[in-house]
Image (cartoon, helix red, strand yellow):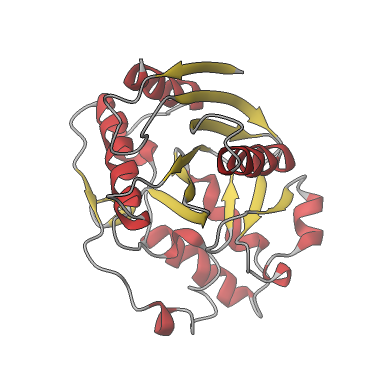
Length: 251
């Protein structure tokens, strides 16, 4: 585990005081979700510093949103493939955490800010990090989709990477980073997946849908609405490479 306590001068729009940058490397799903949840409670109770963390998943895991049905995912198929199933403290839809780097931010919401502003500012920070790979033309989704209609589709309602919400990071109109939030007692937990390679598309083979045709449609729909860092840069990108870019940004 790599840890460093930092002053908030450069990042005062996100962290009002000292915060800790943490790289916990690869861990299982239970550890990863408990780490975020425990630090969230510690910051609420003023027992620990706010945090920016990066981490990976070993073995791979499907995380379900806080209110998502467990039956959305085929537990038997996950067990056959040695894929964990965990529940996030945040909302949203299922994510297969495979070839990615995951980030989490836990911070007090400044008095002159809001959860939506922090959502944007955290994503701006991530864009700054990813642009260290070169002049990548990353952008924000400008509008908020009509999720009331969107969720009526059996295919589109299962995968986090099937659509972009406002302020989510895109390349060429396709989603690169999927994030979710939780707020309690003026403290924000935001975490999300930065796609490195295409393994995330296997969520279609783990989803409980009513036919093989719908499974194929889920895969096609997810791929058509998302993109990976490897696709953008046209080369293999490792967890360690991206973690180093975060370290340099905070150093």
